[in-house]
Amino acid sequence: MFGFDKLITPKIISTLYIITVAILALAAVITLFTRGFNIASLLLLIMAVFARVFFECIMVSFKNNEYLRRIAESLESK
Image (cartoon, rainbow, N blue to C red):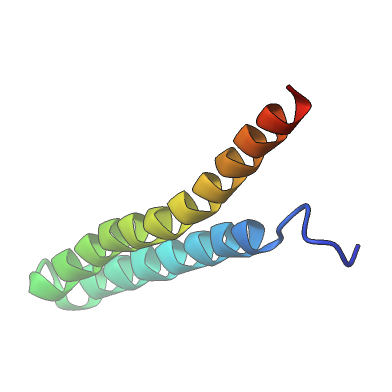
């Protein structure tokens, strides 16, 4: 439980991604219905796409760490 063999941060980041995209999509829909189609609703949808890119960049660092650990373990076993 107190070791760092399994990281919980990627799970937290995945949850934050889902919450962020849901809030941005909801805000875009609300803006679309209250003000009609305008630049604000379009910007909110674009922000949802950029949120995906941002969270993917963070997840790449965790995946690199995982793959590096696998490589080290395979080299140690040889």
